[in-house]
View 1 (cartoon, rainbow, N blue to C red):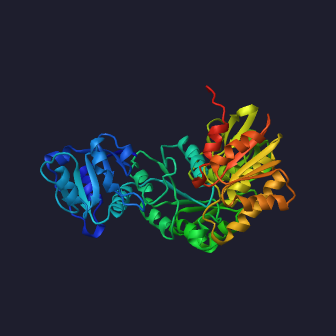
View 2 (cartoon, rainbow, N blue to C red; view 1 turned 30 degrees about the horizontal axis):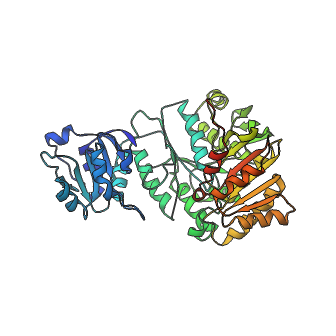
View 3 (cartoon, rainbow, N blue to C red; view 1 turned 90 degrees about the vertical axis):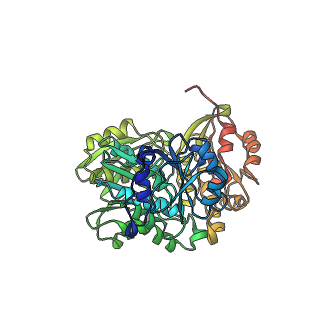
Length: 486
């Protein structure tokens, strides 16, 4: 990821433990070495980059230091255990944590540390502490956090210089890279925060120090790993707990678990939702299918009707969260309204023309019970024959049978045709059949689904494609989509 530019001395200073930090004296070469990019992916290295070699469960970044060097990396943070062998094989120099850099070196300078990920965290934490950014937003939730992040980023960036998490850089290895892009010019920063285990979000909060929290939802995503909804809620609430008393916590009032987080913070609480009790709420909602939604926004100082181009009621909720952030940040409603009207692209749901004059709703990015329900709710608003192509939902643990069955029941209520894909698809199909649906097809794999869908669709069908990331359902979209020149 491209950053605002760092000096090598800043890197060597920032990676040290705060309580042991020593000043780094500069050599001529160290002074002249600028870090123009920081990345954990050797394939993304550009000249002037610093490469951080992280050891994952299946891939060890140390195996790609040479590739990073060939692409133009000038330095690499590596494990102290691996540094001697890398230096010996390639003739590179090593600097250890807290030591002074060599007077000069050839090739990549290896920065040897006990734990490269921890060093990256320390550096990002040190860098973040240098700035008093007025509005630092952390966003988490089982679903909706990426779309909400995009909406918050759009509203804030139209009013002030804003740093925003790109793509889904929301993990302990990628969010620090975003933090390193913060500059004194930014008046706001928007960080999406994901979690894999308990404590992950607390760690991210220590790095980015948010003063505004947004929690979108708590659902059974990651239930297989976390064990219970309560454990997932506790992990998401780490963001709420991290907000200082003078900050603001923004909660989805339509989610009872999230609404309950109000008792976990001493910060000011704002709520949003399609409920009369919410501080920022949507009323007079008129859904117009894939054309979006007309909605009246009611909030302190706001009572106005807008058109939300992103289809689906869940996107209305995401927009309400973004408006709440805009209110906290002092963005005038006129500015927010202009953003909503003209600069909000369709989020997550991608609408494409398909073969045989069909219409595709591409929501293949991922799937969980909450997001599948939202997708089916959108499909139900379409005035065409409706085809739902639904794949496995992963990591649901002990509720996976019931969750897939319930999705099948909803599919029977909203779709005319169902294609259930994957080894868990038979539970979806069973739920649909039990609910009275007859046009139900089962296939074992994504590849196997393509010819089945091609054979059963007819002109003017609207086809929803959705499944967990591991199912790679985008292959079905690619097979059905008609390429245009637009």
